[in-house]
Amino acid sequence: MSSSELLIDLYLQTKRSEQEIIIKLESIIGLKIESVNFPCANSELFLLPVEYSQGYKQGISIMWPANLDNVINGYHIAKELSCALNVPILFDASLFDSNATTIDGDDIWFLTMSNRQLEQVNIEILEDGVDVLP
Image 1 (cartoon, rainbow, N blue to C red):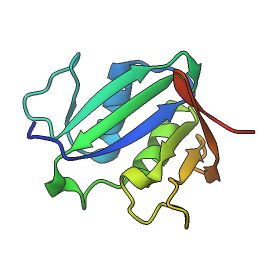
Image 2 (image 1 turned 180 degrees about the vertical axis):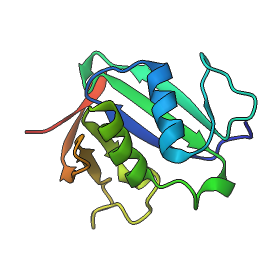
Image 3 (image 1 turned 45 degrees about the horizontal axis):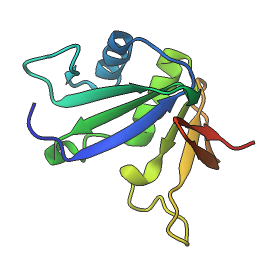
């Protein structure tokens, strides 16, 4: 894979296997994905999973080269992956959408459910994770 310049961070409410996530993402995006544990010689994207002890239990960073920026749609990926894995997914849209900030410049966070519904939420950054405020 070439050097990555752009990314999306997704936070899964419950942990899923890295291999299952890669398989689902490849189906959703239509491009090959690799990770440290699952290398792929002809991949276009890179997946970095992280486990958390608080709040949403798993984070995944998906990185891609700038020449794919018009192909990758973070909202679509989050909604479809949430549906495919049947798990709520939290994400900061400002990482891939420059318009996704408040008037004060704060990031805008969304929660997508397995029914593909998207809801703007307020979050709390925890010592080891992130969670949705009630």
